[in-house]
Image (cartoon, rainbow, N blue to C red; front, side, top):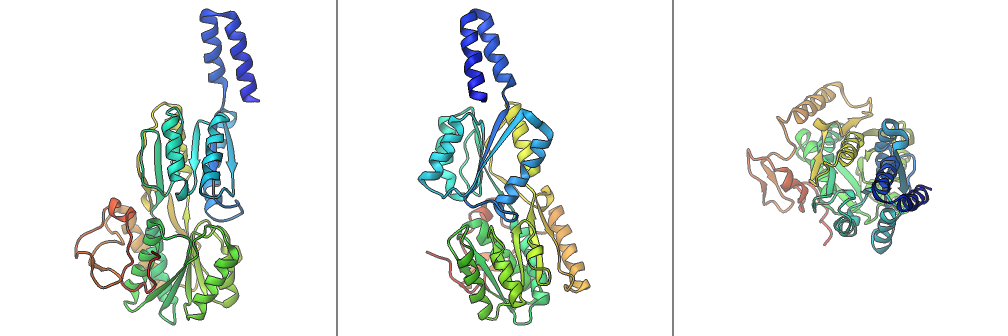
Length: 365
């Protein structure tokens, strides 16, 4: 309906001619709501990555009302279909696009270059343009804390992770999980099963059961959009935690906790910048201090003294006095990853393509 009204207004303005035409077009543009499109690779359910992104737009809708129009397009596979769908959102009149998957990067970037008046946020990527901003969460800050809790509860010394794709964002989450656990028990080992999918509940459950069979008694559901891993662990009596949004209701007994993300502060600031004509592409990496990442829903079985240590570490992460990636850190093969006293920069972290010592599974080639 917005497009139809705009065309009518334009035709009327042309008939009037001169200054009246110009004013008519300006008034129509001013009256039109900002179209915001979110495209995600999985179905949006009640939990998971897509749910966290969708929830991040709610405060914008509440703040701007009918001045914005939000469209959410779910279950769009990475590749040509995603490129076509994202392009259509722009031809439909949307001027703000959130490309909600790493694999959307190239198509979304080309779209941004063709449409300099459109602002694009891209999840988990690394390429930047004047109107194209990649964004990612410092999940590793939360998974380090979960690792501490996991080591305190583990009886086997074997932890596991069912992980989606071997991209730096998920690799760093596993590494920090291992380092947090090793800070409590240096002998801890972590096994990883890569499912190479953002959404495959059956495969994810199989992976969780395989890790349980290997005597992993705390499992990290790393970027699953369904509670498939969490539910399998609850059934087996094995502790589990996940990213993005709470899945506690699916594991009332064995839920270790959640590394939760709240994208609303970042999304709202980005929309405000677009409306003010001040949007600038930048690589945005947000964590505990930004109120985007928070560890929540801690299991009451975690000993009180350990929770005290976890909260102390969390406070140091928040004020910047501690980073999970401060050396000495050894790589999986025993070589030096981070020298003693050195801390990895954000740039080094977002490019991380190696596992720390203690993670026993090789990275996919």
